[in-house]
Length: 454
Image 1: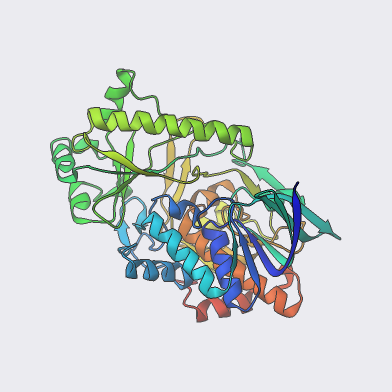
Image 2: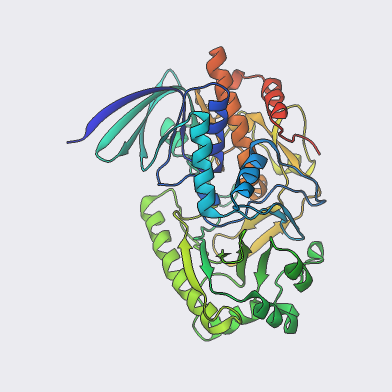
């Protein structure tokens, strides 16, 4: 028999990835009674996968994220779960984090802020009254939990809460509807980087990024930069494909350093032609991800010098989804504004990552260089047609090009912090998200150390 439990909070955050987690912590610190519902058993989303966090530094090395985003790293460093920010010719910067320590620190920060945590619960229903979200129902362990709140924050990644509420959205890329591919990150140990670097020294063309903007992306960089991401091995991948031993839809191999010398994160899985907002396609993607991991392990063992004896230490708890639904907000940031580096009194976060669009049908990637960060307006967090709801995470209202930059963890953490402040202001003043003065959000952000201009 399914039981029903009713709960009441000031702010309910559904989804504990980078955006939702940050919104929950910040709203609670601002005095709201907050619940954070997470469908898995770990907070952090992609940060709990082994991926380094992108977006802390711009292309000139200037710091573009502070506040809660920097606090995560400070806390992780004290627990040997981070090693700082490293400049990168391709990604602008990479901030390695230890996935399991991130889970612990995220949980600890929620508890300190007074956030009530609800793990292993899935959103199943939303109640709307007079165009406003008033209740979200979640399900776990034979229990339906009906959560009433003054403000809801959608941190689900796919926008499940906003979707169930009837918010306006589009799927995938603006012009085609095609979605960027998913990944399944895993970590390995038992590798020998000095031996791998010897191979690269003899085969310098195996450094896979040759564009002009990537000057310095070479063996000297990999040897001297502890926090780096290697992209390359085009020749070895091609050789394995010709032998029928590599059918992952990629033409390159990618690893990312983690804070220790024991584990590397492998981000080479590439799952194309799926819509991860569909449960059947999501399951197909997860299945494909596991099969690709097995194939990549065989590839490393047979073809990659220094990786002959590597073994898996962890597979990410969830599929890494780059793109599904995009919701329409009071403001929709478009590429013309991004390339004009809009950063004004409406901005509540900076995005310092480049435009990085992965083809959802092939092995192609389009990477567009940004000269400096652009601002994300508060209106991108406010759905145009639904009251009582804020968007936090990759559901924010931007076009396909802007999304290519803003989809990564760094700017989403910063936007999530702003969403949490906005939610708390709504509760204190009994106003709607659309009526929150942006100047008041910015004042609190700046007081908390956020960076809103460089």
